[in-house]
Image (cartoon, rainbow, N blue to C red; front, side, top):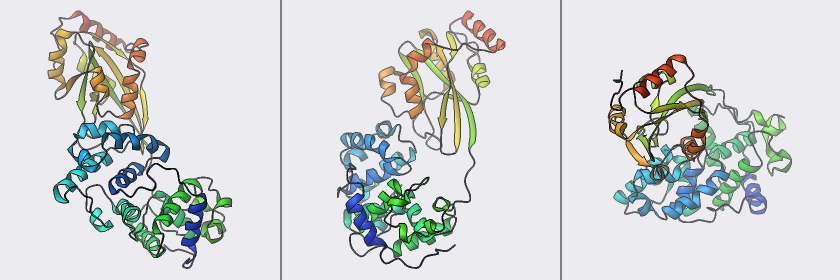
Length: 383
């Protein structure tokens, strides 16, 4: 791995001048010196577009205006405000770190990037951002925008999917830090990556570093940064049980590890066939509804919901079969921390239920007809 350009002593002044003239100055977290607020914004911005964070940031701070309030809140309340931002481990780590600060630091975020990085979920780059913007520390932020700008300007050809090249480029980032105005310089690097040095179709004609950029001179800026090991997209399919009893929904809390960890959702089954077998013999009526298509980082996920309307006298037995979970009134369910696609689907559920697709396989229709004819207290034993 190598950088094909020599040291660039004029890089920082150019970035600082550009940021003051043409960078972003209207972001709601800019100008903040409150470490808590900067921390919240930096965590939200990890792998999430600015346009999305703009909507969530003020709502989150309205509900959790300071660190003690966040630490004292139940995890469900934090996840509910985070629903739709994705990467929910960030919210859990934010909450856990707030409790750690209350217990070990008297409710005050520690000064300095090194101390901040020891808190749960605050990595080296996030710690550097808080230290730079709140304490004026000379530290290198290394988010995706910064990596892209530096890799192109320096012509850095190391594979940033691997740890050793990442460390090497981070060292270069530290070498290029200016002695003064490090906050403006850091914001400028972020702004360049977000608005000019784009991943696709970079706007080299308006870039203040165009004359210094090795990738541009090579005529292939989009070839940088190098990431040879790209994960292949996978497909996944599951079935969901939307169990209703009057104006109540049955929800389960997902495990604390894995996709949507800690969120409330509909019971999940490995396949439609497994779900059909599970509910065969239940009282009530069942209907398949249009599927949810959801894209995760490396997975295309199809979720096929089955709506089962359960009579009141069968609700307790169904709950025993399903195991841990709870009945919620509709308004209470929608106030929980729900996965964003499930929330959107449930909010539109009355409309979806009005246009159902009945069970399609003959054996399914027979099973459902049999289930409706049986006693309301007769259930199929779980296999």
